[in-house]
Image (cartoon, rainbow, N blue to C red):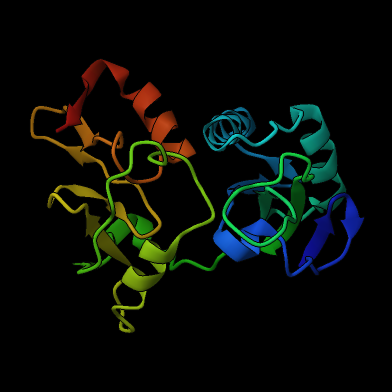
Length: 218
């Protein structure tokens, strides 16, 4: 693992960082192929939207790309994780307007998935943990992932993923995936993420590709 913290090699943060204290921040997980980020523009777009929602300064895309290039390496496949927090501040929920954002960039190994999964599918289960409905946070990839942590702790066997509903009982997503269904007539449907869930960059890519046959699942 290679890590930059505010542009410098390191692996530590101040204990007062609001990302640690309150989950006050955002992250993006970017696929790398031969050192090049995939779907980069979509990641930058979602990160910018998250920053605007949380009132964080939007990092300049070229600056982020420059840092990413520094840690990307040359492996055929790897993962980059970009984390932004509101930085350090005093005790209490109110943020200090003068605080400086913390920026973390990591390169991680590509996860090992069974080759057969793409051909044969995977086993999934329902999660008892539900997603809260909060439109101000819906769609963005904020740091507070406790709902997903609790849902993933529900099983230790061979299920590849757990499916999550919101507090109204509507199917929203997996613990780490977005959901699609292809109807018999070829129509592609996917859950509405206006109240909860994470709007994945690959989800956006699929929706663009399937635009002619897409209908939201309400």
